[in-house]
Length: 152
Image 1 (cartoon, rainbow, N blue to C red):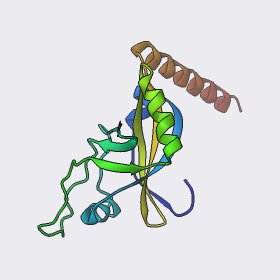
Image 2: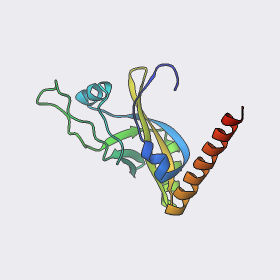
Image 3: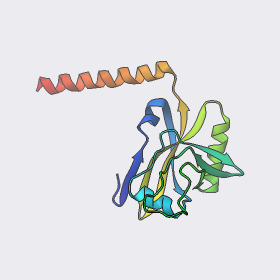
């Protein structure tokens, strides 16, 4: 975590369900009350995913609840929001998504210098046996560390 960065939401399920390959930082196009709700720490990206239309990136299924002090112009909670990425990054991601098994998912939502940013990653889905192997490796590493700790 770098200075000036306040993490609002972290998608813990992402590293369990996917192999995370390339990571990118994207800005978000938000409406007035959405940024206020995010600053209060209210957002959910668990089921969110990124799609591409006309060489633009959009995040879908991201939930930002209504701002409690908003008025009748409050935002729609699950609207499709545009992501701000460089054109070369969008083209690279689109080409990879066309390959079988790849998708783009959000990893974290954070505030940096007052602006809402999102870390997204190119991901490939894990099979059940992959998840088991990763769990075995974690357990083995934990046992080794425990044995070394008890040795001294």
